[in-house]
Length: 391
Image 1 (cartoon, helix red, strand yellow):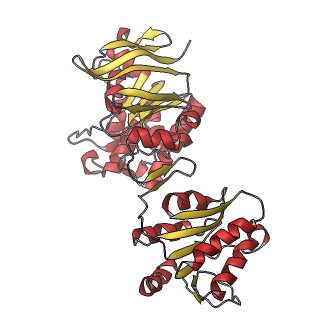
Image 2 (cartoon, one colour):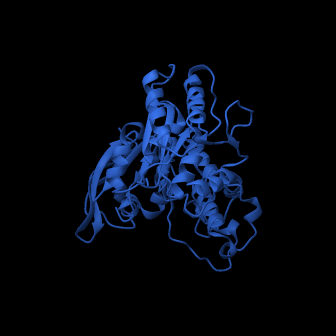
Image 3 (tube, helix red, strand yellow):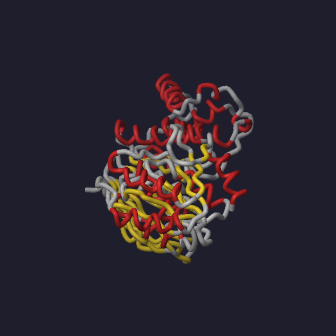
């Protein structure tokens, strides 16, 4: 029996269906992410699961028992919630807000026990919120409020945590910390996490299962390794320009289609920043010779006019060298990213020599001296400044 499941669930408002045929099956301790563009129905699904919105059709079960059969208090013991809606309690400290997570366990007088306070303190520690505990909640930044609300959900001790865009308003440090916290809750405490995220690149790093939503329908559901692909993201989000590379989690803006006057000698991850800087300036370029397993290759394929590429872990072949020379001969400038010229990269050494021979300007980020006629630069910005003057 699945720990948590929905079957043929239809969600929406009144009889207007927003998303239909939602079938989810989660084991205890799994992390599940909803992914899709704004307005696709992610929040509607979450609010239906927590009974903020009444389901139109279908079932939602916990260990085979329909959630509608639980009282509000019993549901609160099973499921803790963090939504994007901001609460604004008057005259409450952050600690007091966290303490409200223990409400389902208090007696008629609402008295907190020693164990309650122990759990409250542990939850505040988990989100690194000790410095916030005595501050008025309303005075906190959005990111600080989010951390306190996560602590409130943690101390509620539900087997299921439902979070709507929990990384919103968080800087990179707390975003990473939060996802690490959720992973540990999943692995160590067997919490089942149900959430929506906007950051496509983060989902494969944390989720056991993912659901892609497009135009009110489930585009695909399963393990992120099987579901998330370049094509799927392009279709679900309707990317008409630009691209998202699921291998490296990289978003690239549309390529500016201008005939190249520049050849970039890249590799080893040294040229990606150069590609993006050139594209920002509207400067078209060729790129090579890259190995297809090189990190620069993925960005070059998105932004370069053409990429001269070789299979991974082999010497650069003569055909690739000849093709690169043809491009260089039609360019005004070769940008040398400083890539290694030894071993299987020896072909790129030949390209530098060719550019020098045919009188193409070589602007280089290389630290070591070379026999070729080149102008060395300490940074990409200084290199680009001269490049703009030349072309």
